Image: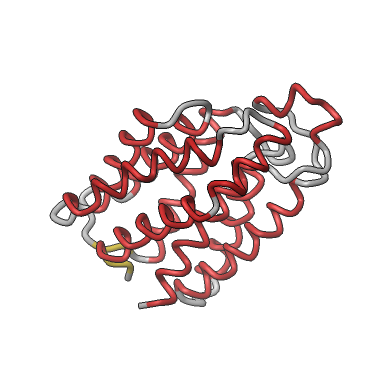
Length: 210
């Protein structure tokens, strides 16, 4: 089971990862975007961090919903609506829950991904967060179905996400600001995919540490 304390810790670790990688994310975005992904994400998750201590008495669904609203109100560009949608949809999958089973985590990941696809209209191969999160969800589901346990399932999800992230380098962007570059977007790692990878990696780090 995944406890509420682990969920709160995950959000804190993710915020720290964003802060540590702010310059890197901005550098990636400078090549094919508006050069603001790192700064925007850091601003949003700093606000999330300040709210986490006030959420300890809330259920997990309410915690994720609060994260969503905070990101939507504080992050500019496409990242706010996209991450806001991911966390909002994820919150509906775990409403009123105080702890999560492997199936709950699978639902959270799947519903979040579905929300992103609906919101951003991106598909696999478009050089977006979907290219990282989609293979991660597939890998997590297969591991859960094989009864490998939640830590092993998350390890496989993160490995799949990392492969997906590497594959974005050779893709031509078909969505977002990067799509304006056409073939010039090839050869650059997707910044949104990179932050999505950090989100999953942060969750794995917390699950491994308990």
